[in-house]
Length: 309
View 1: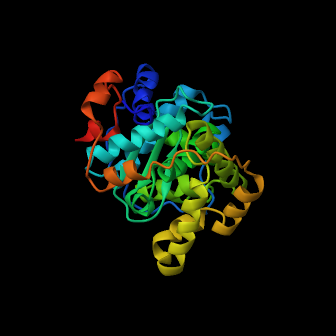
View 2 (view 1 turned 90 degrees about the vertical axis):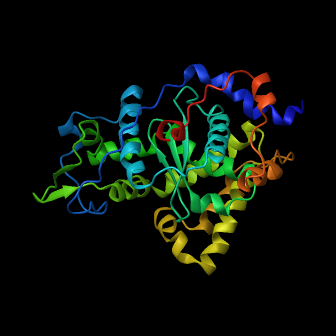
């Protein structure tokens, strides 16, 4: 059997014993005033008994509650082949991170906008719009690696703790009063925007550089992230609407490309592209070979899709 086709499936045996089952219940989007992430939020994090040092089990629980709320508005794409593929690629990259034991889960969501979102605790959501922009497995790994880097460094967790939001997620209370005494409701779209906007420029650039390193460790072409960013820049010239949300929450593409060019180490070996395998999955021409999966061990990877359909 071709060894290049085995590495991805072997991650099953590496991570299966570490994965916790995900039990998510869709929450109804709260009615009322939409949350404005640019406005001042409610009680300080200290008043909720939170601090910058959040226990990992608490982070996972909070992330699952947030993901359930988000998936009520942005459901997973009904394609088990692509969902499985994204989970295998994502978990292989995540095993190269400093937090390999997190219950990493990845989902392709039904959203035409070009975007991806990291949820604390090891959950990454990839929009169908961004999937359609990708051309290789290395590019898929690159966008997942950027989000994995955010979770690895707890960028969102630190930002949201300071906003006092996580305590409300833990208690299922997504409604509170801001400092002016006004009633604020966090809807699914508001939570999505909150998770995407509360990161600094430094966090985003650092995640790009970390993604570059994760790609190298995973054996992928480390230049794949730059390829995706350049394609996004091209799309922006013809269809700015699909990128407007991502552009409003990230540094300019030119800054990100310059940072990668200047600060990321460049190795001679380009690594794996995985173009043929990606296109076969994307076009529905193949799935993972059953015999190879059997030889690689039992398939114990739970995906978000398995739990919803």
